[in-house]
Length: 404
Image (cartoon, rainbow, N blue to C red; front, side, top):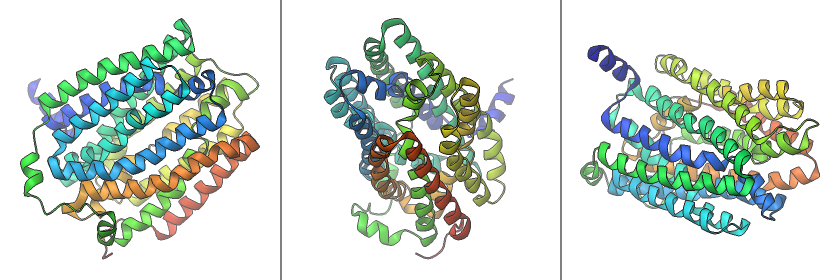
């Protein structure tokens, strides 16, 4: 039995530090997703309008951009373990802000901290995975990370929807953030126990580059080509992102309840989780470009399909499609690492997301104005960007490192 478990762990790339990392992702994510998916509705109930909802989504992208590069820099400078400790503390402070001050302005301000957790910790996370796992296990490791991230994404909204049903929207969301606070503290303790300190490794690497312009000069052209396609695809995703819940719960002829929306999210996340491991197994043994192309196609089809989904059966099919967009996402992240210079992976990953999400934040803010024209306008424009991004990568995308 022990030998069999060891073989399974080896197949999945589950080393001690990876286990600590995955445990932290589940606990922090579970608390966060209990309420985060319903924040647009919470903002509306507190007196914020469509602009406030667009602002929240735009800040999510903008902060993801601004925090990604410092996250990578700190991971190289002080090591993964210490940087993750700092990032967890920031999220905890943000949760406290939402709990104690029930105004839409306080939610927006607090979001500067709790929305930053995934973005600021991601470069450290992928840096750890690339450091402790062999090349032939990196897509599997990235897929395991993506898989466990989906556990809170589908369990959290179910619990959050149940809390809202039992205690009302405002009280239910604040209860969700209270639980998030408790789980984040537990996650921080677990992370400090299990993750091996790599501070000495960070000090022994080449001099850390703190200037994004100098680091941009080191970015290979193949990675820049991937970045362009990724930006266009994220326009497709983020233009309607914050309004998907509004479409489902307010706009369509037969609106769904909070719990039903949680069920739709469960369909999305379970679909993603079922494909992660088999796709990772294939991607680690073959060319990566076809997997990335497929995931871009699924991104593109979602807003168009949502436009015609106005009942529970149709929405179930559309959210299954939304889950399929994760088909090649871990492969795309692995491709970023493999195209980046080996001694610059965390910081290069952070720079990639700094550039991508800074530009994509425009789409998130602009999505609110497109929505005010009409929901259909919002969804059709999103679909158009997806077509452009997919075609760009098919024509210009590469998966082998070339000189910048």
